[in-house]
Image (cartoon, rainbow, N blue to C red; front, side, top):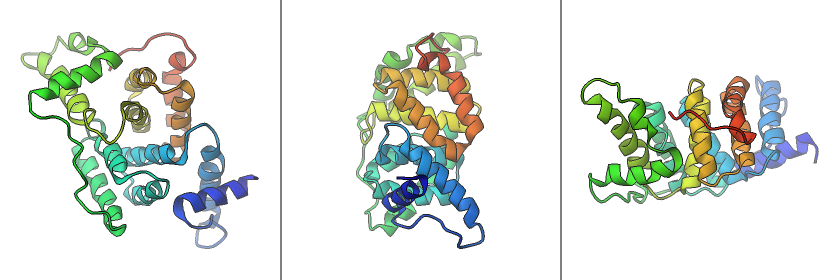
Length: 259
């Protein structure tokens, strides 16, 4: 297939519509957009439509681009993602982008679910049975991937904050979200990498989470594929910032600074 045929095929698979032509006010721009994302990037690398759409939903949530998020929630359903998988991808953005933006994304996502006749609320994916489990179980997930250095790194904080800040990280990121079912740990770590890359100002955290994604079972090719796939949504500079930040890891050299 040539590029035009590839674009048409992917647009049909994901959106059940034809690729852009000359119609409308900005047909030429849409042809460039669709040709790059759906004709080039979607046919480069190993990730399937399902995983690519979870990456896209994550990046669009991080960027708070709600009209496009709605379109890709629908595309995710078309690609075979379950509503629970999509919801978990959105939910786990909260510790990184904040709760207000995540709530806006949840609202947009739920509109699409309602339009598809999906009953809300979706089934619970919570596995914690008590408040006391948040730290213990969060630490069980955090330690094999990231160690416990974070507590020592912020021991200089005044008063209660020296213990509270590392504990909040463990309880919120790893306890409240990563203990949930609906997505496996490998997928959660890969989505966290592209989420941080999309923020554009978190290269230290990108390095740390690339290391975590590799430890969780992702290959170097999958990490690069996810970042390249995100480039059409977050921009080329953020792609290169992320690749440069984790070049040593992806080329098999060196460790990274944590958080």
